[in-house]
Length: 57
Image (cartoon, rainbow, N blue to C red; front, side, top):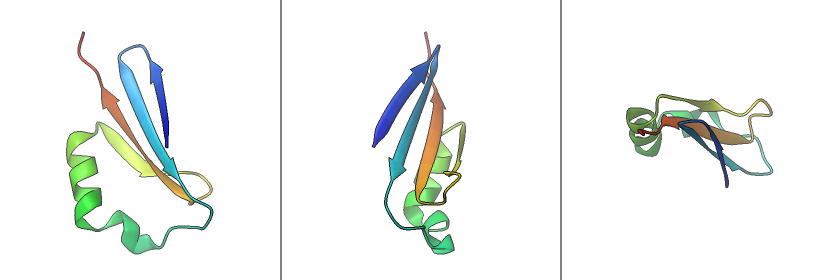
């Protein structure tokens, strides 16, 4: 898990060693993450997911 910030944005990244199956981005957990995040997706190596949230001042 990695947490990074830039201004009012927070990005959370969860990575593993193996590529994720496509079904990992379709389950109930993914629905929850994308409902809370401003944007989300797979990492470029397809071994993790990330979500970006906008923080309020």
